[in-house]
Amino acid sequence: MTHHSKPRMTRRRQHAALAIAVVSALALPVVAQAGAFQLPTDNAAGWAHANAGGSLFPDDPTAAYNNPAAMSFFSAPVFQGTLTEIRPQGQFTGQTLDVDGNPTTGGNPNGFGKFVPFPNAGWVVPVNDWLALGGALAVPYGLESKYNPQWRGRYFGTETDLQSVNISLSAAFKVSDKFSLGVGVLGQRTKAELNTMLDPNGAAKAIFGLPLPPQQDDEQLNVNVKRKFSFGYFGGFVYKPTDQDTFGMSYHSRVKNNLSGSYAVYGSAAGKQLLALAPVLDPSLPTINPNGASASAQFDTPAFASADWLHAFNDRLSIAGTIKWTQWSTFKDLVLMSNGQQLLALPEEFKDSYLFAVGGDYKLTDQWTLHGGIGYDETPSNIISRDPRVPDNARKLLGIGFGYKLNQHVSFDLGYQHQFVSNAPVHLTNQAILGAQTMNGYFADSGDVVSMTGTYHF
Image 1 (cartoon, rainbow, N blue to C red):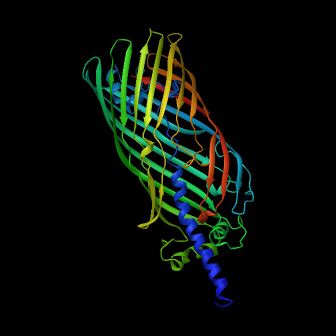
Image 2: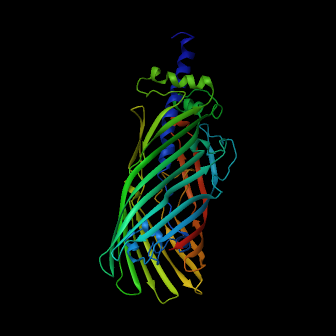
């Protein structure tokens, strides 16, 4: 080997390491999106109930999506619109180190901390004594986190924006005065933006031992993918064993989403040229367009089921309970594709989760009603899947609110819910091809929800 051939080989190894890092980082942010960001599709009273009771409270149009069988017991058409704003908090405490064991530069911001709005709407129309129709707009999954691109955890994620919107139609069939069935179909639109930073020098040093300073030549990677429409189904039943008791069960199917879009790498022109050399240096690597290319990944929203109960003690006091199961364990692995090539296949380790809640109403007057509730919501995440994008853990729920009936046609509700989240431990080590950084510590999390609903009874 000549004196000049060794530097050329060193440069080639650096280039290959950067190419591998880009390929791997493309998949890692998407994995984090299968974490705990399922949103209750409730109105303001439902949030105040700590999400207890489902849609069993009288004349609740969220039944059009939550449990369509409850629509059988409506006496007149009802339309409802809800605006909900959620503000999660997630402050990291601990250390982040580069491949040399030195602290990662940058600050430590709260990547959440602002209210994020989303709408829900529902309508129900009784056709006759045994048939009712309904429709709903719901946002069952959503997450927004944004860290400064120079924060010290940037190699584990900088920005995440995910939203799934459902439009559904449903029908209810009243079998008897005590029993009804309901079915529905939905169309789901999902989009995601996932950004992160890469450390090519750290990758080259971790893989080949090259004496390059880490944290010096960061590359920004952005992924944008979406699915216009995927379809699913749901259904349920409602049974009234007594005049005071109502019991319901519902099931929502898994919805398969093949997200497609593109990725882009932002950095120097020289860095982009290095990416083009990757398949030349190692034919086993997929072709990466330094100016960006297509990207796709399978993101299936999980099936879930709910059992709800409502008991009316008298005309003023009602208490409800809910047990909800979500089948997160169907996330076994994630495969990322680009231009027909498999870029990476990664395993998943999610587990099924449960929500337990109790809540109710107390009617102060014919116009004013108090709402309240408590609950416990498990997390499907674990030490393998938890990262700064979704630093989630089990949470306790406390809700409170009120309703005001303006007249026979118009009513309003306001609900507030606080979520007490257990500290979420994070122990991460990036793969060598990503720079071999480490993150050890925990996120101190909490959440606030404010919801406002307007209802019109025809």
